[in-house]
Length: 518
Ligand SMILES: Cc1cc2nc3c(=O)[nH]c(=O)nc-3n(C[C@H](O)[C@H](O)[C@H](O)COP(=O)(O)OP(=O)(O)OC[C@H]3O[C@@H](n4cnc5c(N)ncnc54)[C@H](O)[C@@H]3O)c2cc1C
Image (cartoon, rainbow, N blue to C red; front, side, top):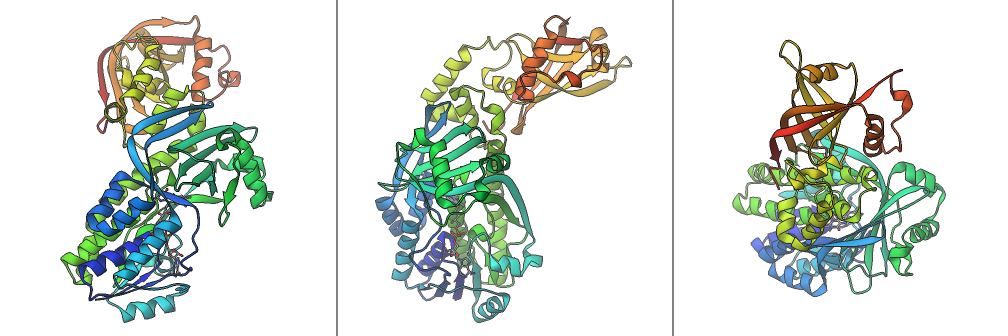
């Protein structure tokens, strides 16, 4: 089979290696725009599972990888100046250029032809290449010319996200995958740092667009930007500088394609889909794509049927990862509202943000961290009928859906802010509203409280309103405003003239706590 691959990144190179291993008679050419010594960014991080994938599919690449990679078994969170480490996930870091050069060498040894400085620039060139081979693979990254040239066929979906990020490096060593939260007068900055060789760490910084504006990055060049961020993270950098490589601020785009192939042309890796760097899985998906496509072609050498089979088998897995990445990046976009939390609950929320890790898994993998979490919980009011591991719903901006009963027995549902005092669910409303009148006379209620980061996880409670009190209700509303509005006080202008606030104390009688993927 004659195979041409546009792009010599992890996806294209690993696919070439696998196909050559499958059949040395395949004629495989990679066209790479850059030289073998160029790349963007710094290091990449791979999970133990991805490294196992290398082992399974190409033990030679695996052995080389292990020789050059750094590895750690913890993830770390720096919040309020305190570092919290959580054990249980082994990760490997490697300089991106080292990974690419290792794959170049392996591909060449197997007989793959790699043409560097070969830019495929337009649809004419793509048509010509497609006509001259059996399979043309577009593995040329997120700005894929192939995808753009046949956009009506691939049907791209692009979700441009708000946060700005820049991919930097530093000589400071980070002994685990670390997320650092630091703020100055411009706003919050989040660093994602990990060591990828003996002397260097990746240091990606992200911030909200307003923070970016206030900091004045639009007017700063590379050295001014690295100096500014170096100052924000001075307590984390141990006197080391931040360094840039092809410096540029970007906004992450979540990319999907409805169709993955067109005629004998197929997309692979970042050309096909992106995942946010906070779950560090772009290279993982690129390598897995290569394995899946190689398997599909091994199973069926007819390209016309192998490509649909590739999409069918691979897409659900990619969708799953992209969902996790979306949950992770969305949580980071709104993390401001959780900064008030102590380091331990903050780290817990961070660990569970992509919905792929829950309480039970953390308890298995990192019992010492969960012990710290439980100790923190132990200082809170007693959990009463609510399972302890669901008390975080009363720390997040979780809206409860409160069902009360109308005079004719039909249900009425409204969204409410929710609180818990260790015995009663507390709802705050105003005298005279429909739910107030309902609860005043018919005390049976039901309330469902979903996790705002994962609506599949929720508390569903049936109970009885045992008290309605006005004393302290305004102070209680201010307390809720601190969590839900990130304001010291509930805005007086939001109250009606003469509004009388009330707290409704609901004693839970039946509690269902639902966490399907815990
Ligand atoms: C800030 C940041 C941090 C990241 N961190 C991680 C991480 O820690 N772990 C992780 O797994 N992933 C990470 N990623 C994602 C990862 O870099 C990509 O998902 C991965 O490189 C995708 O591999 P690929 O082979 O599909 O594409 P790429 O690596 O982008 O390779 C595409 C290749 O195609 C070449 N090319 C492009 N256009 C043409 C053309 N017209 N003609 C010829 N050649 C062309 C390019 O020069 C490039 O070599 C990160 C990404 C970013 C932006």
